Image (cartoon, rainbow, N blue to C red; front, side, top):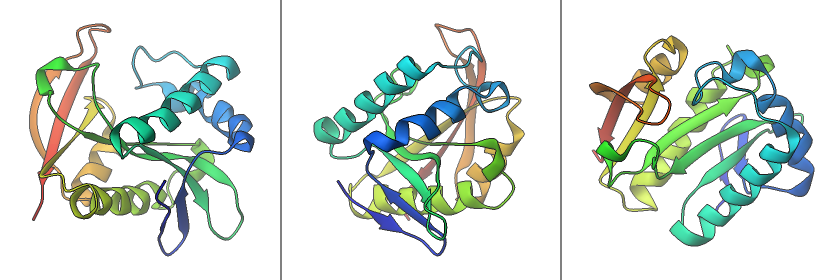
Amino acid sequence: MKVLKTERLILRGWRDDDLDAMAEVNGDPEVMRYIADGSVRDRTTTADNLAKWSRGWRENGFGLFAVEIADTGEMAGFTGLAIPEFLPEVLPAVEIGWRLGRRFWGHGYATEAATAALDFAFTECDLDRVVSIRHVDNVRSGRVMEKIGLAYAFSTVVPETRQPVAVHQGTRG
C-alpha cells in the first residue's frame, strides 16, 4: 500500500494498533452526526471497518489511508478513496472522503490530507473524475470540498437512510 507524506501528516496503511483510536473516532456522536444514519459505531464494527478498508486496497488498488500526525504519531482518522455503493445513482464513481477525531478539527488536517489523497487519485490511480458526498447540513465537509477544488454537482437522497446529501465532483486538471 502507498504511503503519502504532507507537511504535517503521514497517510499510511492500517495497523492493528489503530483500532482503539479509530473506535474513539467512530464512537463520538458529534463526529458521526452526518455519517449514514448518524449512529456511533462500536469497537467490533470499527474492527470490521478496518478489515474492509484494508481489503479495499487489495481489491481496487486504492482505498482509505490512516491519517497520522507526523510530529506526534497520533492516528487522527482517515482520508482516501472508496466506491460509494450507498449511492447507486453516482456509480460508476470513486469517492474521496475523510473522518477525523474531533480534537483534530480546525487545524486544516482534513484539507491537507484530502488534497494529498485527491492528487493520488488523479496521478497514481489515473482517475479522471472523483466525487465527494456529504450530508447537506455538513458545512465543514462542504468547505473542505471547496478548498480541494471540488464543485457542487447536485443534491439527492441516500436510498437506504433517506438522508439528504450534496454530491460534489472534480476532474483531473
